[in-house]
Image (tube, rainbow, N blue to C red; front, side, top):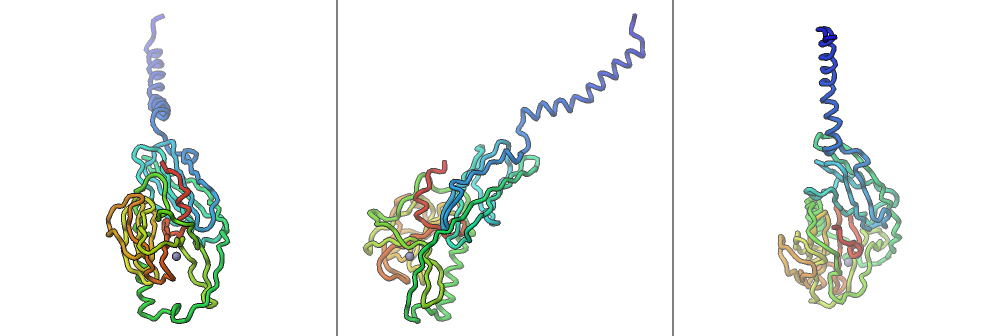
Length: 309
Ligand SMILES: [Zn+2]
């Protein structure tokens, strides 16, 4: 029987129905072919180690399986810079725990958005362990510990200058490979984290590792970076600070002289200064300190960081 007009219309309607479904079918097919939205499970955070002592360092790897347009990271509520990732799907950051951080968990949080502005969050806990740093009680003649108004103002100004450096941290990593001790033939360093009580009053803890060395001994950059400060400070004496990027700085205090200028690029192991006893030093030694996103960390922990590549 020939197809009647009504049957023809019914066939058209069936075809129209399929045409209306076509965009949905295409969207489902495309979702398998194109990078999809970032799901929480697509954002992977790994802390190695996930337990560190006060003053310790951990590396944070962030990996994603979908396209990521923006990525933000907070450690204990403080946002830290993230290096550019180009077409890679992973970044590695360093996370530092201040030597006076209260033991317990610190939240590490990441938030990624995809090209459509959809965001996904992921969090991990970094467990901070009590380092039980030794306590040192000292009796010092009062004029040595009581600062006059002008000196106190100078000390505060110098502290503010350093704090500005940590705020201006560049997120890109300027080094490769491992860190090294800043002296050739260095003995074991000592004194990091020692809590000092002077004339019965608690003072700021010792924020670096001290190495005894003869005056004039070359001080070597612990790794590649850019000299971000050369100064003459009341407590630290002649000082050099090297910015390694990724929020990490190493500091070299009580120097006889600096061999570098601010803004200069230095290589790992390059002589940047000479050992001295400038500032408030009891004798010739190198005070080696480190900051990571402002946290006062044990510089010797940097020696244990393996390649971040
Ligand atoms: Zn020291």
